[in-house]
Length: 112
Image 1 (cartoon, rainbow, N blue to C red):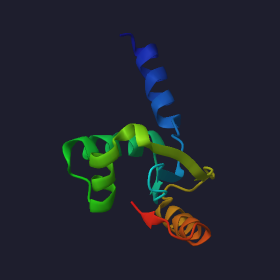
Image 2 (cartoon, rainbow, N blue to C red):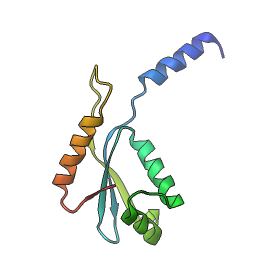
Image 3 (cartoon, rainbow, N blue to C red):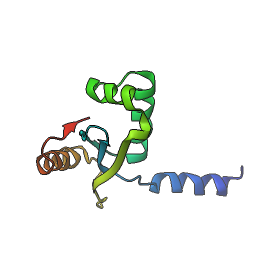
């Protein structure tokens, strides 16, 4: 790989900004809803799927629903998206606040 191509790939990697926000996991058979905040939504979905498939989800109720109904009975969606801001590197507090607001706005929902 030539130096120019390598430099271009590094620049693109530095500029990459994945979708971040609050994700909802709903179970159609029971109506139960779980919410989670994520700096990288696609990564959260992949991690959740992997943990569920291996039986290592920290939320035992979510794990039970996965075991009983499978992934096909689960509906996920991005409830709220958080936009990137210039000069901000850490969005942890913003995501925590957004998750709390979403939990309050959706009574009966649980943290994933």
